Amino acid sequence: MPTTAQMLTDYPDVLIQVLGELRGAFLDAADSRHEAVQLLAAQITDPTSIQFAYQEIIDMADSAKDAVDALLRESGEMTEAQFSREFGAIRQMGPAKLERESPWLYPESVAEILYYYGLLGRGFKGLGREANAIVYIPSDVMPWLPQPQNTQSENGLPVTPVPPPPAGRTIPADTSFLADMGTLLGFIHTDQLHIMHDGPNADDIERLVERLQFPFTSDDADLNTRLALMLHLANRLGWLRRGDDDVIQLAGNNVRIFLERSSNDQRAALFAAWRESPEWNDLCRTPGLECRETGAWQNNPRQTRESLLHVLGRLPHSTWYSQADLVATVKQVEPDFQRPAGNYDTWYIRDLSTQEFLKGFEQWDAVEGRLIGFLLQGPLHWLGVFDVAEPSAGDDMQVALTQLGARWLGQEVDEPAEPSRRPLQVGEDFTIRLDIAAPLAERFRVERFASWTRSYPHYVYQINQRSLKRALDEGIPPDRILSFLGQRARTVPDNVAAALTRMATA
Image (cartoon, rainbow, N blue to C red; front, side, top):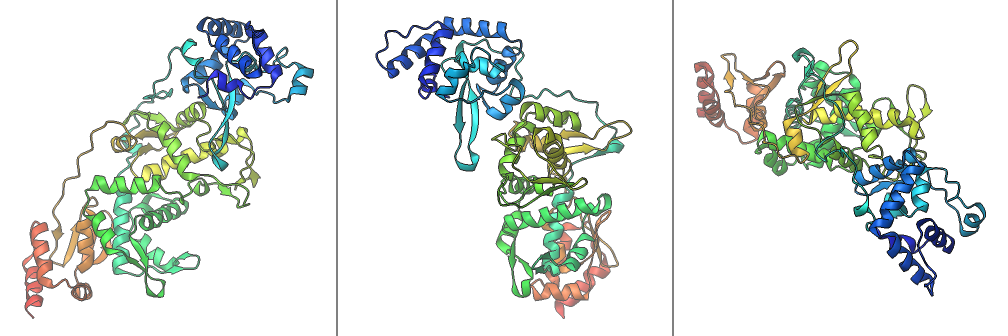
């Protein structure tokens, strides 16, 4: 942050004189403007002068201490928009208007009191679209101000936990999204997924949906968003390439590398791909909202995620909170997580139920609040960062940061144990049953020589003539299939082993 001398450099002469008078500084010895600035800065950064000014200010306005404390909790700097919403704005005036109106005699806000006493400066941070106005306490003033009491630690948020919900209402952030990504890989390998001019072929998607875990507890809106995220992450991770006739094919090396990783590492890769994606726009996927393309504005979805995740990462894991309380806390501690410049008037976001354009900070709950709720129950839940619990009568949705989520968000937390691997079950009817949590690599191998039958409550595949011919065309002979089943199944029925042996020697 700038020093006091740097802050004063661009001040008009009238403000230099006013600051000197208000702070009891002597500037008569200065022979030039530069010397006046240096003399003033030296005198008003004296610890005793700072402490006298601070006491005078808090005697003038009850909320002055709160304003200084708020800045100190943010390391001395805040966006001007956020600070102004709580402590008022600093009216901008040229030298002539300053002399004519003397606003330091009749300040209209706590911000103006701090400004005219030299404890608060204004500036800009960032470049281009990322530039935003800030207010700050000069770096050589901050050490001499009383530090706020009960400052929230960086490792905590001012939000009160709630009792854990009953098990029957809890929806853990399980591995179903990872399992569905495995299903997508198997589907693309064994079936056809066509890409049309307006997106994936609807009939192909309908066949894919039949194989997913998600549809059993979801509505169409959530399912469509989840499907879009699955395809986006698959493409971002380099799994997909467009083949002939606009049929999507797998990029073998990238898929193989992913399949060989542990379950925890696979989930971490999916989370990182979402977190770092500049193209996936959560705001424009939020139910009930519509981002209108006007060409005059754009949001930064990656920056939004990073800012929000930084806040959520301060929660202890495995502790339950009301979603409404958590959203209110974000509004309190980091309201501009999505709009660093604090501009709430230029984005064209429409409420689909009312067709109203949502502008102004008063619409924060309708936009930012709704976005946070969508993220907690959508991508952050699907990707394993938050458990959720459905509300009962009179209750709100509840959420809890998972152990794995806390680890991804930078906390020193042990990695959860990998799920134990269960043997395949091979039936005399040539079916193969796999547990829902079966490793993706194992299920993908089964996909290559057996046909999918169902996905719930277990994955079931059928070995038949068509699937064996497909496997043989890919260079997978029956004896290799039998060897794999012998290694991974508890038992292989005699008739299944005999049929594969007979085919191998035919």
